[in-house]
Image (cartoon, rainbow, N blue to C red; front, side, top):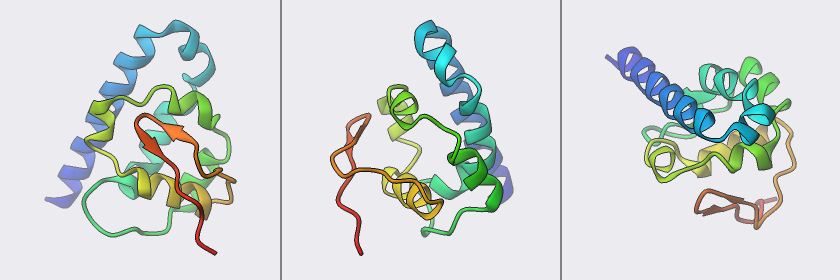
Length: 115
């Protein structure tokens, strides 16, 4: 059942991303390549349900290649309803990205990192 829910979530996220990208051609040119890979490799690590779990090497490989400000411009309330931005920041930082506190992704503001 959990696998079916994860696949359903990934499909829903993909559909939302496709709709967003097709509606914003300027952003599409910049982010198009990274969004599907980001969804397929990392969605299970950023779902609202469940605990924070360390991302896979495949997820980190995708995360390291994304343009964070570009992807953050795609975030809508619909996306905020299905993913945890606390987990998104955790995944990014776990994968070695520097995500500055105060960065906005949709309505989420990245807090200071805990050392």
